[in-house]
Each structure stands twice: as structure tokens, then as C-alpha cells.
Length: 574
View 1 (cartoon, helix red, strand yellow):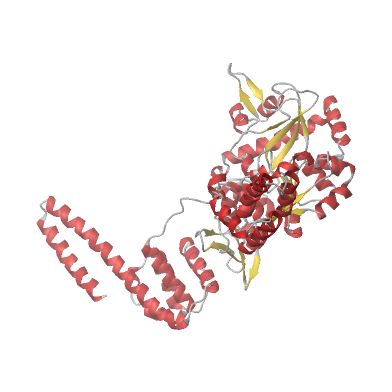
View 2 (view 1 turned 180 degrees about the vertical axis):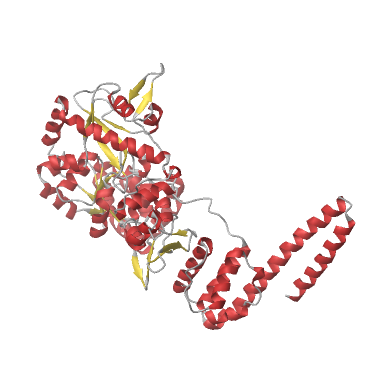
């Protein structure tokens, strides 16, 4: 029997390997654990089971298989998740069902074709000048191909015509961020006369572009694609698709400012380098980086180094508990220049990186005179907000002590000033990128899940479940199977029941409970489930009695009242 694409993908891909390419998983017993990527937490509650091939976060409640994980982490629909995983598994989807071919899929096709178009333009006269320019900047031919750099010709609608010939509508090209409509209705290419840097998602698929001016001073130096259903620059890190494995391996991220900085860093062996894709570092980008490592090395142009204290991204990273270092480059050099001329000096600069507090202290005491009252005040105003953002209280006390010693001030006075500072979460408008509007489970569902967990911890106690009629259909199915063979792992359930069973089986492997507490809790859950179910039925019958009386159907009302009384007696007996 031929496997379906879904079954074949699941047979070829291991969920630990797939999720491990997105998150920093750590082995815990027979399972794996990580900080949940879907909500903010400090203690890991996200578990992956290689045996059950599922994930479950016991913090926010999200769970599922590899398809569900990819849909959530990539923010895509099922058809796109299928395509991503099929490509990873080396499976060719011969014919996608129409409902699987989404708008996102069309946009991805357009971006890929546009990339090929821009690459092809390098063969023309101006394109060859672009290549010469890139080579002069020390970007190698290999890097040009690897990063798929191209050239957008000056002609106003060259790309539009190319994509139209491929069967794509102008409206679709606009939606992909590659064209716009002028007030007079004329359609124009978004990128014209620019060197084009494709921007990739984590699967190295092109989702957007950045264009650098060439042979002209018109317009901004860099122009990024507008936000589309594929691309949001506040949620993308340039180069992360190529850097994430190296980040995990080296356990730190090198963060630079520009596209050429990133490319040259990779070219010279610093493959754990990314940039913030033309935007200030955002909470969302930091959440992504935290999946791979909690250490960031910030590398900025030398002329900007003294202004790092004002950079919101560093403040946000500190608030999120990152271990931060600042890489100081030789004066007058930016990362790209230094990497092109002397990569060994860049390496030494990385090795000599300062901790964020060392850098701030060095900056503050070089700017202000600690011997004067005004200088002491300025230094404390500069450094106390930084110290307040430290998450670890021991580290915070250490730096307060250092500051007090340097200023010859009392530590208690500095602590008093520290308390006056407005919390940085309010000041910075820190917002956590979390999955909201999660479906809330009813008390009845929670009780049934807890009961299943308890039975899985002590299978022989299934005998106490005498009447399954009080349970929802999925739980009736599970408990019925467990009654047949309490020790056997169930595999032949309906999809929804199997999902419930697997999640609670995983929970039973992770969560401990004292044996003597199991039976009393089982009895409590059973009673509460029965009481809840009977009360729900009584409420429904009460409504039906009122309706029957309003309709003057007294015979029906009499029967309903009798049923109500019988249920009331049953409730008293529970």
C-alpha cells in the first residue's frame, strides 16, 4: 500500500531533528526539553517526545506533530508546512491538492522567479559592473552565488513584464512587494537600478529583498521590500538560515548592522553572524535568537560604538536575560571594511569583546569626570538604568558595589536612586511576542485530562471507572481501550482521541506524583466529572421545562419534571 505524502514525511523525518533545527533542545530522560518559542518563560516547559513523535508545552498548552509545529513556528498554513517538510524529507509532491496551494505558495514562487531574474541581469553590461563592484568590496564570486545577489535594471517594468510572461498577475506581483501602482494607475517595479540582496526565511526560501543604490545618489541607500504575507522585516534576521547551526555550535550570535557585513563575516569563517534586516533589533527577533543561544556579540561601526547606550535593541536583549558582549573595532573601521582588509583583526576584536557592563562603565567614565558632583550625577544617571535591567540579583549587587566604589558613594544611596527609575518594560514598551487567544479548555475537559493522566500513572486503577457515559466521546474511547488492556500502549484511536492520549502519556512520563495520592485524586475527579455532567443536564432540562410551559405543552412538561427529579436524586447520590 502506497503511503500518503503526510505518512511518508512522518516516516522519514524525526520530530526531534526537525524541532531541534529551530530550538536548542536538551535531553531529559527519554524526552527533550526547551524554552517554549510560543510564549515567554524562564523555566523550560516545552517537551518533545521521540517515541510519540509529538511536542507539548505544559505552559501555554500548545501541542501537536511536526506539521503543527512548522505551521506555528513559520506562521504558515498546512499546505506550506507540507511543502517545507516534503523538501526537507526529499519527497517530491507530484501533484498538490488545490486547497494546499495557498496564496503564500504563489508569493513564494514569485519571489523565487524574481531572484532568478535579478541573478540573470548580472550577465548584462551594467550587471558585470555590479559584479566588479562586489568583487572590489571583497565579496567573492562564490558568495555572490551563495547569497544569490542580483541586479535590478533601471527599466521601470522589466520584472513586471518577466513575471507576467510567467503567468502571474500584476496584483500578485504587488502583493509580493515587487511592484507598486502610481497615482495615474501605471504599474512600476519596486526595485530599479539597485543591487539586490534576497532575504531568506529559515528554510532558505526567498521571502523579500533589499536593494542598494548603484551608480546614482537618488533615493535611500538601502530599500527594503514592504511588509507582505511572507515578509515582515521586524521578524526576520538576515543570514539566520545559514547561521543558526553555527550559532548553536559556538553558543553565541555575532550581530552586525548590514547585509555586506553579514556576507563578508560568513565568507571569512564567522558563520554565526546575522543582521537585523534593515531595522532596529526587535523583541520578536530576540525571541528567535534565544532559540539557538542566549549570548549575543554586538558589532557596530566604530563611530557608533559610543552611542550604544541609546540603542533600544541592547536594552531589550538585556531585559530578556541575554549575556551581551560589545565588540569594539579599530577607529574608523566598520565590520565590512575590517573583514575585507584584515579578518584576523576582526577575530581578535571578537576575542577581546567587553561584557555590556564593562563597556557601559568604560563609556561612562571616559565621558564624565567622576571627581565632580556633576560628573558623579551624570555617571549614575547613565549607569543605573543599565544596572536595573540586570536580571540576576547577585550580578546586580556586584555592579552596584563597583559603581559605589568608583564614585566614592554609599551603596544604600545608589539603591535608593535605583528604585526611583521607572521600570524599563514600561519605558521601552517591551512587548512579548506570544500566541494569544489560545482556546480555553472547560473544567470538564481539564478534569477528564487529569483523570487520564492519573490512570496512565497507575493503570490498574482503571477498574474504578465503572460508568463511562459521563465522559466526552474521545475519553470514552480512550478509557474503553485501556479497560481492554491497561498496560498496552494504544495506537488505534481516532485522530482526536489519539492526540489527547499521546499528550497525557507524555505528561505521565514527565510529571511525578506520589502513589498514595493517586486514588483519592481519581475519586475526586470522578465525582466532579459526574456532578458537572449532571448539573449541565439539569440546566438543559430546566430550559426545556420553561419552553414546554410557555407552549402550554403540560404533558411534555410533566415528563421533563419527572426526569429532572430523577437526575436530582442521582446528583445527591454521587
